[in-house]
Amino acid sequence: MKPPYEITTSILKLITSISEKIGAINANLLNKPSPKLRKQHRIKTIYSSLKIEGNTLTEAQITALLENKRVIGPKKDILEVLNAIKIYENLEAYKPSNEKSFLKAHKNLMEGLIENAGKYRNQGVGIVKGSKVEHLAPPFENVPYLMKDLFEYLKRSNEIELIKSCVFHYEMEFIHPFLDGNGRMGRLWQTLILMEKHPIFEFLPFETLISKDQDKYYKALAESDKSGKSTKFIEYMLNVIDISIGELLDFNNRTLNEKERLNYYVSLNKTEFTRKDYMDIFKNISSATASRDLKKGTELGLFEKIGEKNKTTYQLK
Figure 1 (cartoon, rainbow, N blue to C red):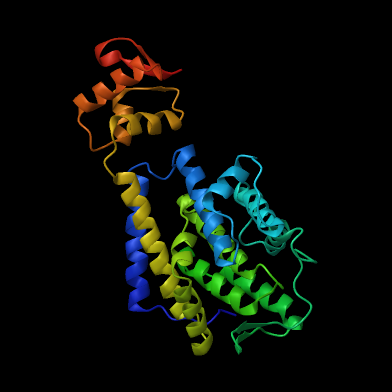
Figure 2: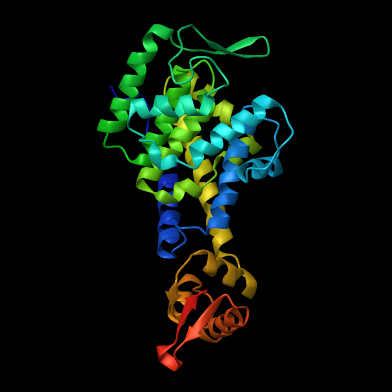
């Protein structure tokens, strides 16, 4: 059974905007960020997703844990980060349309933090804000059937991934299948659904925008609960994705200096290349600027020059 939602004018405009930005990223060969940029995005994703759940560790502490350094902090917070690092460093191990994979991800994400990690809840739950019950989740007996239906929707629906990922995220939050970890699982699984179609989403920390204004996130969930359909949440999440992917484009298209261009190009690990290859990455520079960059890179020992004139190539050292 298809979860209830409507395709509004706002949703259509956002899908068009996101699709255009993805096209620009692919056209400009920006869909494979450098290892350094990938690491920065991963840190931001882990930091933001766990901050939403109350984790107190800083980006600097998460960076240290990512580099296997010792960190002083609450044991629970450190374990949450270590678990998340394992997940985000092995995203390809999880299959977004596979329910067993979903349960395995929850087990890995919540290992050591709750009992019965990787298993659906066996008791009723409600989300309380202050003295008010904000959301009463469906009875625990219904969870396996509801989640089975949701994965069937993922597998069989012809809807585009941008919509399906938002619908899954909302419906999973509504079902609240686990005693804890539902929020981070919803955001993780939306990333995986989107990654399958557009690999760039591995490096898009939309959680950062959610964490900056969590009230809007919870408001979108509450409005969808009230209306009985996920339309408002789809609009909210697509807007977050649109802004995030726009920021990624702006970052990649900013004016780089000579040193930044050389460092970025070396990080791509192209063992042999020409000036044309270099200019294909940095489309806004002149051939004279490219030649100066490559001369400087040779002087710095980043690569060596082979051949002369139009037969010149460069090899990474």
